[in-house]
Length: 270
Image 1 (cartoon, rainbow, N blue to C red):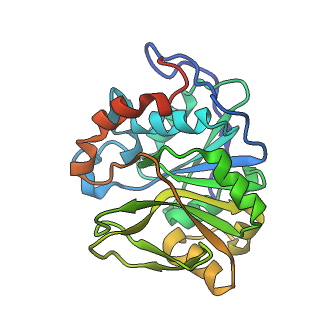
Image 2: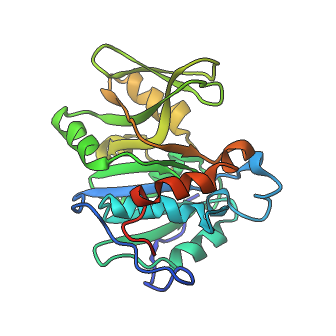
């Protein structure tokens, strides 16, 4: 089923005491961020029974606010939010964003569950040439400009920003070759490893190969499908603070994470 129309968000105040979100870096030309905000967040129930996981409060604001602040700070000019579970709340939240003049935020509502890959496909018609896919429940405070420069210089078909962790048992791991290219995605397993930081780069034209819009997973369908077709997908380890609020133990640390790294998330202390 085709998704509903995209609508622009009016520049109204996001919340009491919040100023306009500004960029601290040059504008990333030709880049659209797709923020995946449609998951159910079952591991955070009952907190997410009546609240989308990306809107869970962290440091006094919805978590999605901090993701958005980081993207705007990095110079991303356009953000598309996917909305699924309790999507009306995501739509309302996006409509309340107040962004800098160079930035634009829109929301795309799923009529039926599309998975992470299908949700991205449903946004491609409004994306620019380079699509930056970001999980709406993680925050990786990497600098995007050098990552995008490497992607373009190496003429990659895709790139996954990775995080080294001591215990990868909650996550699938990334296996790369000697050239830093993705070899395979491995299942969850204990021990140290490289995991996805929830940040992906793909040319829009590469993703359009998976049209028409239908339920797909980035990890199960899109990335493995590209690898089978010979795509060169880079893995870029990032030495940067990382937060995943997907389980209660991690969410309990989120307020402290934002307080510690706020200067790397927002451009002004609003």
